[in-house]
Image (cartoon, rainbow, N blue to C red; front, side, top):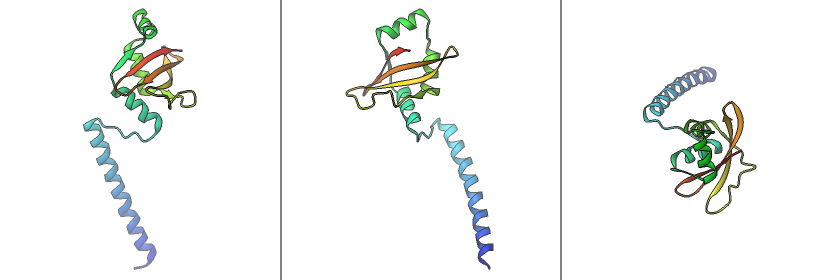
Length: 125
């Protein structure tokens, strides 16, 4: 059997195997609710969503006034983009992240302190 024929059979088998693998992993992630976060933005947002939330006095006032609601916060923590350049990721004990997102169809920035056990929502800019 020539090399090209063997290469063709190999590539056909490899492509069929990859298709089965993609289908299997997609079904498994949908059933268990797991997500595969490999990029820094996704990993930090996933960590922030997993921790209990505390609110600063300024942020609690925004919640009480109705300027922002829990759906807006969830939208930031799900679809937001972390501005790593302006965030303080080296501070101790809590890292400060600035998350850009949409609030009432306008661009806004959510400032969050990521502590060991909780997150504190500081302000909306």
